[in-house]
Image 1 (cartoon, rainbow, N blue to C red):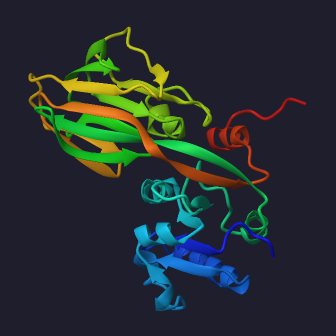
Image 2 (image 1 turned 30 degrees about the vertical axis):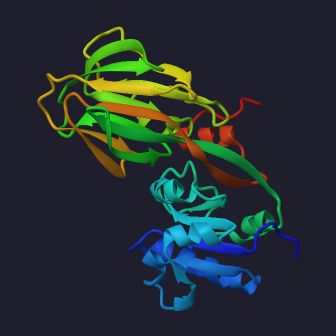
Length: 294
């Protein structure tokens, strides 16, 4: 069988019975097709039928595999994606979560679609990530990446903070609000959408800045070129503990007077989809948009 993939990595959802069953099926299915299969040790160790020699850490899996299959929801995909984007590894998902914007394959009958993908019948696309950095007195204190969004907010619910926003060092606005969401096109259908942000189609090289409950009637989401650098300067008048959340997974602490720099990361996530994939069809299904009239 001619295939662009030789070594396949499996990434699962820890302590989730349904995901474990799907991962076990994938392992058996791919081995029967003759592929070398590696399994993330965090979940593989929980499944007796998986050989210990197949277990490896996520970073090593990214180094060794041509394709990674993520079993779980969008949250699992995001966690894996922040690591796998460092490597030129294709990523596809089997949905064991709720919405599943990023996980295309059904857990009930993934075999036919996955086998077609393994033959080279797939759609490939690149999704850029955000690089998030926190500076204190011009010194880098912490950094991480985000696939969906970076969110500046207080660590208490419904507490206003004050900050200034700059784009490429040009002052844009000052704001008192619960915070600010800076979203990629991938994240525009996630937390940003719940906050009233626009949907950005995946091919756009853009970021959305979405205020969270601003203390003004004139504040609106702002879409900017993703090659621009967003800088948020925290006012010294803030008294609450502040933080920047990356994909709701990684939290960076921020102090009054700190600066948060958000820019497009160098590495991209290489997503692949079955040939039948349509972004607009996903939107219709997940957001319950109306079907065609005729």
